[in-house]
Length: 521
Image 1 (cartoon, rainbow, N blue to C red):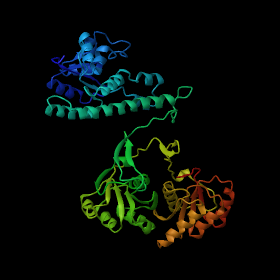
Image 2: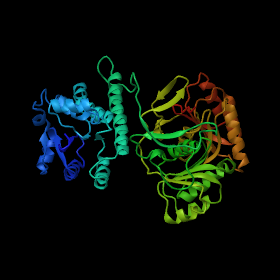
Image 3: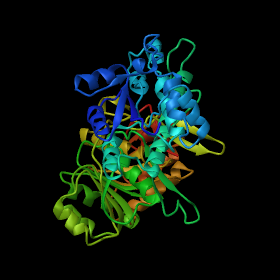
Image 4: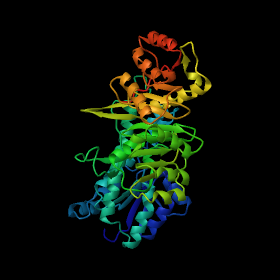
């Protein structure tokens, strides 16, 4: 057995790089075993291959469902090379060892993601032989190298080139960890799909058993407080434009609170088509504005609440240029986010080496689920993606908002979606004036928003107001009108809507209803 050539079994659905990998293995003395489409590709590219059916002496059967499920394959993978009994068994049955596998699986998740995917098609894309080989090789990683990701091919070939054609034990263990995580994800996706089916076989949004996987990016210094441990995990496939795709250009490592607040700022600012700036403090926007430039948007947003902006998170939905960076240096900040940062802006911000500067590509992707942990379980919901246009609201008062007021109402409504309930947002000309957040009483939120604007020296005369949920009584409405509001946007739906509408007419303001609310707890 010691003089037998090393063997590699290659059987992949994702064929990226497999030809080059096979050629590299041959240069290190490997004989190649392969199956089906992988074998045909390698042969077409002039790579010497032994078909698994020829190797086992048993043909593929059942439309390819059975091809690698054979003792000559699995004994060759699972045999412990240092065990005399295992070596004797292999010799008795004339079975050679298989020392390396490159296997990846039928694309089950991509298949069931297609709207037209049938149940029968989904079932046929459940791989059996592939996971079996992967798990066997990963279990026996002391003797077998197993690769499930084409991105690992070049690194393993490079390691072989400097290590006498061998894969180091540390690398084999790392590859095995990757395999077990991958097969767990694969089986989890199958379970998610099957347990989501109703009696008619139609998949629903919520599986009966929810399986999720994330990869650890880093452990944080601590959590929300120094006595709590924390780590940052991200999706295996990050949605386009999501914060988790950030590239950090400078600054200290991000903390738990930094990431939570940065996500709140980024999710809000990326909903605007116009150039916009959002400043967040303790998970709530404390200033939001649009402008003709990043500098104008930032300047307007900062004026909303300069006190709260101290130590805040600043997010721009476009490039950060030199003039805006110069303005940012006038305040203390923890994190700055932009789609790109110009070289001149980077030079200026380098004078604040502790400030975390992130680039995040703009995108419309979003999480499939929002998840909140409770004692002994989780709450799962679809994300709040509702945005409104002028035709989506109804006027319920004698006075109608002007075009400019309606635009401001929709702006305020968009901001209110990202403010903790109860939320009240005063706006004027594409900028927030005062924000009341997280109060048990809507009246208190209205009063706090008014106080915030007054403290910043902003006039609320002629402003508009968004309320994330209905006014249960007229008292909250009276507070915002007394502060200077002339138009209000709210969901409606209270048993006292008529009373509130009558109050709006009495005070001669415009009020529109959205029919939806934006609670954020």
